[in-house]
Image 1 (cartoon, rainbow, N blue to C red):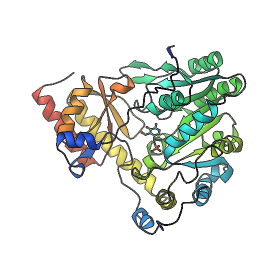
Image 2 (image 1 turned 135 degrees about the vertical axis):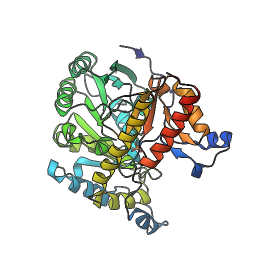
Image 3 (image 1 turned 60 degrees about the vertical axis):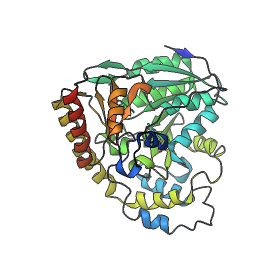
Length: 379
Ligand SMILES: Cc1ncc(COP(=O)(O)O)c(C=O)c1O
């Protein structure tokens, strides 16, 4: 298991998707002419009513530092899972909560725990970045890769926790970028191992609401009761509030109180809070989003498979495709205004990740890949 020494003075910043202005300038492109498949958010765009809610926000008023109304509505939304407002914290994206977690748990590890975090890789880069900024050590358990996809053995994860006693263990579920979903029983076993070691299991569910199998993996009820598990949700992803950023976490009241004590006031702006209230009230939205994701996934998988490109099975709103030289394909597509995620930074230089947009956009991307393939098949 590789161990890297922490270097808080020179932490490496994680690589993320999204289109950067500097690259647009270099390529002579305008944002409005591009399609972004590199950030995976709901293909439907924000729910109806969000734009009006934002327009109605008083821009001269500070936002509520406690996000009280939204916290209560989120607790109500999960009331079937036994939540109250004391079990919820809202953040400026779930990423803010990841950083609060590492400041708290890596900054002051629980008694008997190491100043370290265990990551199940390949995975979202922000965990590594946040742990290092907090002065912690990162250890990794890398998934086994075969033609059917990627998998971790929950028993091996539990054994690594017992051995290393990390303050934090991160499981991204479904995982970015592999799309693998770990079942609830496996998560519960890992949470038990974390509890025995005195650490905290972080289950990042940024993509779970857009997964057809989400019920197999639900840990919200566990997180509210079990002091050693916290679930993260991303309303940025669920409701395409990408420019606003909004996320929340569910955990036992003491865990939430510890995070709240570290959160800067007003970190969640008033526009995001107003948008979140409207979004979560739209009961039909997520079901429609899941239908749209399924249609786009079928389109991408069918079109790429027909070109001889392997698409790994996915339970999320993105597809991991094995394309040969990922950087080269990504750059060739970018020159056409189509941005996919090169997975080299995840340790997968032969893969791209395609965030699922509406079917017509996916057809356009598939046409471009087919065109490039006809010029020079990669493999
Ligand atoms: C697994 C995972 N968690 C969290 C985030 C960040 O989401 P947010 O906008 O809620 O901070 C991302 C973004 O790519 C992600 O992939």
